[in-house]
Amino acid sequence: MSHDIQGAADRLLEAYRTGQPIDPLTPEFADAPLEAAYRIQQAQVDAWVAGGDVVRGHKVGLSSKAMQRMAGVNQPDFGHLTQSMFHLEHAPIPHGTYIQPRVEPEIAFVLGKPLEGPGVTVADAVRAVDFVLPALEIIDSRVKDWKIGIFDTISDNASSGGVVLGSHPVGVTDVDLRMFGCNLHINGELVATGAGGAVLGSPINSLVWLANTIGPLGVRLEAGHVVLPGSFTKAFPLAPGDSVASTLGGLGSVTAVMGAAEPESDAAEEGTP
Image 1: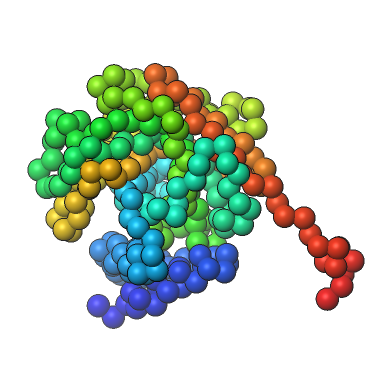
Image 2: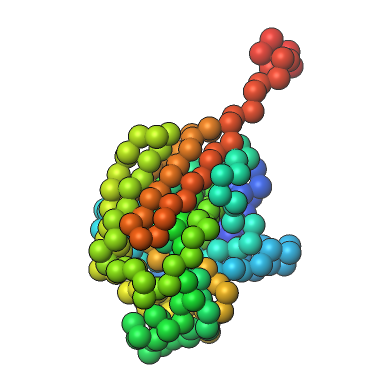
């Protein structure tokens, strides 16, 4: 393939380092298969792991009709979750961690057993889940103005950013994953409601899709890994100082807090070079 896979990965890695987003990759890779986008994603993951980060799970993106409409696609995608992406609930996330963050309410499957496709069934997936937690995913784009297509978001690790997990574990058989409701508040204002069925009919279907999609690539979901199956609502922009709370019927709640913007220095205010 003539496309510069490593070059695209390096540009995205530079966007992480500098906080400066890049132009969309789609025009450059217009005739490339989605497999090339996953190769760009994997090149970044390899660089993070080489630098000391650790893969702690995966996410499924674009698994709800709401998110597919926002991105103009009709299929899910997946990305990697690394240790550095996890933030503690209620602890302010430092300003500048993300470029153009948005938030999504989700649940998190925490696996008690490995899960490897192809051939994984719903029954297999249920048996593999140790417990479920309420979660908030912070998505981000290293592409300017979120002008992304499916190739861009896959290349950009499925627009992954960060994860905040709640602290109330619930057995997967103790909640109806299709029917539980979700209320999302930002700064105390109710901005969206949703239900588990928004995610491929049931979040467990998303876990099955993930295992069967990455299995042929030689990737196994490991015990202890966290899997985010997808959002129950559309994503909402985040600003410095925002407080976000998601309440899930039967699963409790989870809160994420964005750090306040750093004040400008006196020199900057006075126009001093």
